[in-house]
Image (cartoon, rainbow, N blue to C red; front, side, top):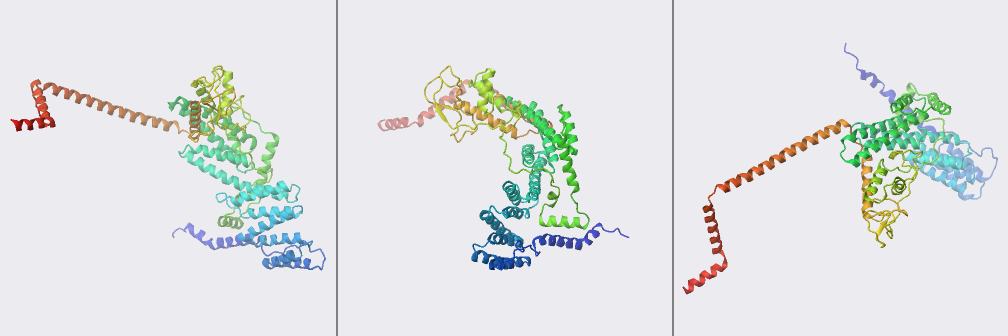
Length: 582
């Protein structure tokens, strides 16, 4: 008897799965459908025509006759502009569009809710209208790998609600919705970072910087992200890798300046790896990744931080709340999976979102970008070499800070120093300024002659479209010549390129070096062979010339001279004259 095909059981489930998908879609669509709607003015006894119109409209909405209901409500609004039910009628019009659904219906509902907030900002229903606007976008959320427009809009509307209505009874619901929306947004950014990290591990080493930028953004903007421990661990390990790549590439780099920048990048990435592993241990102490983070910190020979009791309790509550969330099983799980796949809704991300903690109510300020590692030291050495700044240590610290736009006290962890904050903002470069060059007693560039004519440029060449816009800001004690500004810009370009282009592993660099050495050896061998051949040809020609007799050479030269003389016009005329007169 032939074995039963494993596909037969799956095909047998096809009708069940189809019915399950229909059931899931029908359940999802009936949430706003024909259900009994509570009349907010049902207890108000009145025989006034505006009240009667309102009651009839609410009854029509309960039957799903939204168009008829809106006609009655519009009649109330237009006929009785001073009615005490005006605000309720305006809200009911928006609710009718909201319950009707569809792209057009939801767009109309959002506009109507916004009008209500504009005309009745002090009513308690204004907070409900604002939350309904957020729900409109929340209901249209897509999976993290799809268009994030609705998620971004939902986040903005929920933040508006929480800021404008801090005492609303709907606040708790809005906070949980915001956590879920930010979970979807964080997952989308994390997947992009993971994509770049995958590419980097497959050989596109420059993508390490793209991955690190994305993962840092996720952790900065979404502190309650459920996979934050995993993102932090991958970020820290990526810095360990890049630090090792830079350190290994130092001995293969012949250029002194590039070698110095490699060393600075290796040191800076090591410091970032330590910071991220420490954050992982403190923020996610009960995560399985925290154990690996502690081991990595010990390998780096740095102290392992101890999380506080509050940090441990918070992380424990996060994990327990996720475990309490009811998980679908059996047919319900199949329905949920099919509906999520067919509709594109982020059900998995919403289910695992945090249930505690305050989500970010405003977009965090993007920290000012630190100068590339090693740039400060490189510019300092360049300016000392040109004589733009003196060589004593005290003046170097002050004037280098002016050149690079950093504080005098330190250059930051990225440049080999220590710092307690990465958000210190550098002073922007000032526009081009003209001024008198100081006398010989004042500091000036080595290639700037002492003069009092206003021909030297102070500060950056801001107005030069071909120059970088990050040149040094002008100071009272420092004047840079155009040549020195160009040197500074060159250093900035070199430092940025070295930081961006992560070098390949040492094995690949060694293979490349061997290949280049072999090619160079082959070229030198070929060049020597060509030179030898040229010398040989010269010697052969000289030898052949020496073998010919001198008289033969002289006769040949005389014959050539006579032939040339006969061809000249002067000789031709003379020959003709002699011929005529004999």
